[in-house]
Each structure stands twice: as C-alpha cells, then as structure tokens.
Image (tube, rainbow, N blue to C red):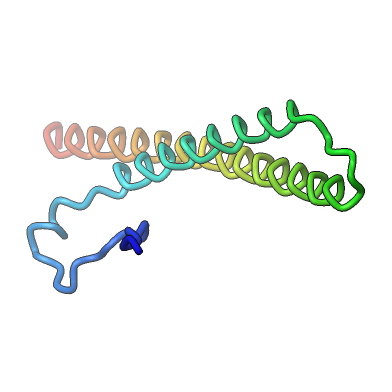
Length: 114
C-alpha cells in the first residue's frame, strides 16, 4: 500500500523573529484570494463536466447522479460566493493601504512644513 501524502499546510513549531518581521498581511490576503480563485475554477469546471454527463437509466443510479449534480453545483456556488467576498476584501484592503499611504504623506508634509 502506498503512503498517503498530507495535503494540510504545515506551520513551524517555532516562529523565527525574521519570519514575523517579514510577514505582510496584504500578501497573505492576496495569496488566500489566489487559492480561492483556483478552488472556484476547479469547482466550476467540475460543475460544467457533471452537467454534460448523461443521466443513468436505473433509479438508484439516477438518485446518486442527482445528488452528485447537487453537491458539485452547490460547491461551485459556494466557491463563487467566497471568491466574490474575497474580491470585496481585496478592494477594501487596497483602499485601506492607499488611505494609510495618503495619511503618512500628509504627516510628513505637516512635519516638514511645520
């Protein structure tokens, strides 16, 4: 029997000060958003593929097929909703970062001009 590869992300036991200083929340959100986009793409492709399959003729197989269509469709819908929420958060983050930059520039001008 083959060994199964873990798909869970690993977190180091001890955080290094260098890692804490280099952590950028905006990069983390962008990375998470990219992962959501990949999941949403897979879910949409799976939903399209399931919709193209022929429905089986046996009653039990038809029920299983219908359940599969529902499950894949709901997954695609949830992934799309999560991605849309991610788009909103990315836009809010961009506005926040711009506001911070504008505030810092204004403070520097104020300090310079006295």
